[in-house]
Length: 468
Ligand SMILES: Cc1cc2nc3c(=O)[nH]c(=O)nc-3n(C[C@H](O)[C@H](O)[C@H](O)COP(=O)(O)OP(=O)(O)OC[C@H]3O[C@@H](n4cnc5c(N)ncnc54)[C@H](O)[C@@H]3O)c2cc1C
Figure (tube, rainbow, N blue to C red):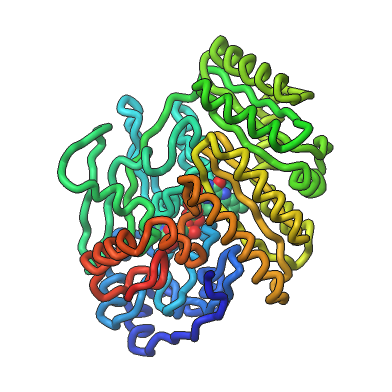
């Protein structure tokens, strides 16, 4: 199980701080509040903050920050929007946080090719705002207004992945500052390529441990002609999950299908002042031509009715849809609010779709037996769901029990061919699970890649796996 013991503080030497301040002036901060903001997340870990924060405004800034850190032998931790939740950003070995949020220009939109190239600090909402008049959109939606660099680095996905894929499928090319401070390019704007090792895929999901992405080229999609959202309530979780399994097995190209258990609907109602029925609920969205949206919706409605689902209701106006999706995206914060002062131990398992019902059932039975309050939300069309155990951070007993629940859930997931993390990444929290999932041999190969690209171990060290 993951250790919860905070590591020691690692102050930066004055010579390095002087060098950073000389090079970056006001774009380097050592103020405690700024460092603290860059050294924490929603995870249960409490770790001392990085020694300094550099606000990069160009690729050259990133190069210089990486080289200065290298000269002084201290780590660098790339920082996008700070919404990751597995301890990715925590300065477990000290170092410099390189915040790229000011590298926020959309560099090109090639509508005819359905491609955009952005700086890494551009957020997904910003990109969609800039695409507004083009008839195109960028679909990957992890809920938070995350940066494209951070999303690429965590191989993010979210609600739309069941139809449009994850960052793995949607990043075509990158510009990367390596651990040595060199600038390299991977990939092209072509849809496919057989040119050598796939370095783009190597950096996508590397969590800042191999280099800093300074440009990201992504795929775009035509805005669907028609969009319709619906909610449906079910007598129990099994009925809701069976509806999803059959929807996917029938090949219905549903764009989003999210599960909330009745307990989580109650939290969302309280937080968003809604009056949804406090029963297991599916929130769905259909994209396509008007005829295809109608056909998809009728198929799913019939499957839901057969499973005992009722009250299938539509949200056709953009305002109604936004209200529902905002409530869904805020479910995490609604859950935190339901137990003031709590923190969440979150899980992110993803199973082959046919195993989803068993997996959800066992997770809920276990959580109920434990007595620890929890929430359950899921991008269930992908077989991916999150349990969040809401613990008192002052109670070692609750932490221990929540970690046990998480561990048991992962063990069951791996036994049926699933993964410990569908989208959040490994960070600090899931390092032991990675070994359980892939075996020591595969993790050793990852260590070899890390050593080859970052021999001094300065790129976001202490994440994904422990070096030997
Ligand atoms: C309420 C809530 C709901 C969420 N739901 C989802 C969800 O549905 N799906 C999902 O996928 N995620 C979800 N997340 C997690 C989070 O939003 C994603 O992991 C997101 O991709 C992180 O992007 P960011 O810009 O915030 O990155 P950060 O948190 O800033 O960084 C994340 C990691 O990427 C590295 N990194 C950042 N920028 C760069 C760069 N330019 N180059 C190299 N490395 C970099 C960092 O070092 C760090 O390791 C959720 C988070 C919250 C708080």
